[in-house]
Image 1 (cartoon, rainbow, N blue to C red):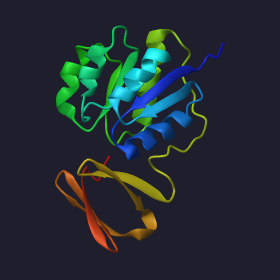
Image 2 (cartoon, rainbow, N blue to C red):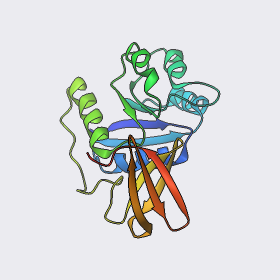
Image 3 (cartoon, rainbow, N blue to C red):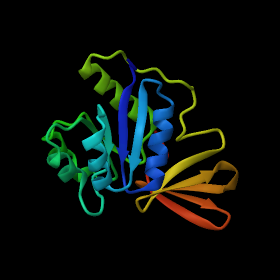
Length: 183
């Protein structure tokens, strides 16, 4: 019997799926069984295959993540992955494991997975590689207008802080993200 946790990703944003897939790859305890941009496809998959954990976006066309969970008779454990904070209270009424805000840092993802493992009585997860994919030696991902943008460090001319925002100047454009420079 495979001791790994079977999971799926349901998110309408390809970049978000890619980031979560990279996070999952770092954790040998997780086995990704599929990723779906359409919640109806995920629903059909779950009729035929069982998983223990779903990484689920909330704002999606056709069906929200919250409505998706409500349609499942015996839902697997859910970790919401969303860009919207306003659904947090409603999501916890569904007894979800955690609520992650995009873009999701690996450290926060790791914490949510360990929370799930602890609730299920499974050993804590270990990381396969030291480097988290969100921040590498060459680039960083930032969130601008609900889109993840890869910014190469070598392309940055300068960065400026504007209250709760950061403006990144690169050769051909400016990127503004709701973030602070000091962490």
